[in-house]
Image 1: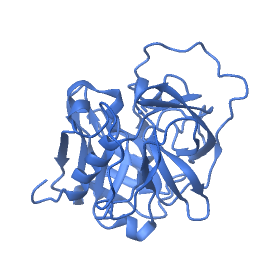
Image 2: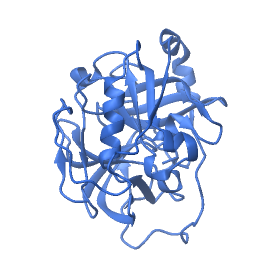
Image 3: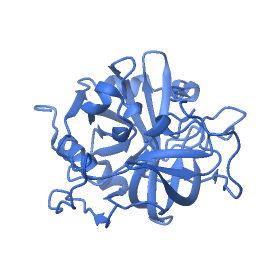
Image 4: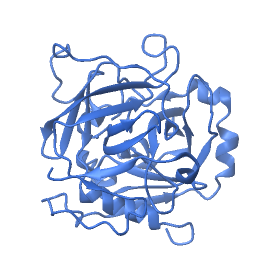
Amino acid sequence: MKIRRMLQGALLTASLLSVAAPPAMAAGDGSKVHPVSHVEKNTSQILKYWTPARMATASPVTSRNAETLLPAGPPSGTPSAHYSSGSKVIGALFFNNGSGGHYCTASVINASQQNLLLTAAHCLYDPDKHRWNSNVAFVPGYSAGHRPHGVWPIWMMAVDKRWTGNADQDLDFGFAAVNGRIAHTLGYNTIWINEGFHRWVTIIGYPARDHNHNPPDKPIECTNYTFKQATYQQGFDCKGFYNGTSGSPWMLSYDSRRQTGYVIGALGGYQRGGAYDWRSYSAVFDNDILKLRKYANDCQPSHC
């Protein structure tokens, strides 16, 4: 399965540090954020590790939380995802979780260091095994084995302690830093917070590429309205979001020409993103994600 996670919107520029804080929200005002990070000291080995053959045999991680399953079958009128040309700022995130090669979806995000990716926390840290993933690499624009913008090794990962400690579904998002100013090179999505529900979003992600789900090994795309699943969880109905789409950005005003948008969610959260391919979830973005991003942005190898 796709291991996947209100008020007025606040547009965040690439500087991110000058943004005024929006009104506080209970349990989401950022005051309880305690970042936890992991630094990879030898990123040169990552490029050697991810050969084309290893990427071709990597699979999605299947650690869905299947509690409170919905009745089988999507609601009438649920759209289906279609194959997409993808985006240069969205790609496959490859890693080893101790039991082989796997992948999720990640996207380049606005930050002054210009090196941050956004994905689901469960794509970076396994709270069940209490371990960080290793040999993590980002391939923007990945499609059918092609790597049009190269392979970017990850040197740092950051999530909230409430995720590492008790897998808090409302904190199922995290940041990873690549070697190099990827946002300067490719562009970036911009985080918006406190956007509420019933928002028209586009999601692009990388589903399982087996013969039953995604034999062309291409990204998929779908647009629909979000809905409220819980106070800090939002939902999205669209068929085709199988394993691998965890971390996919939920984008307002997606510009297909620039291949960027304004991100209000990342697939994950409740049931690790959802128990069915046609219903996905994300944690609501509020001050918690801004505080975590600031930590990740300020983090450097010498003092992270």
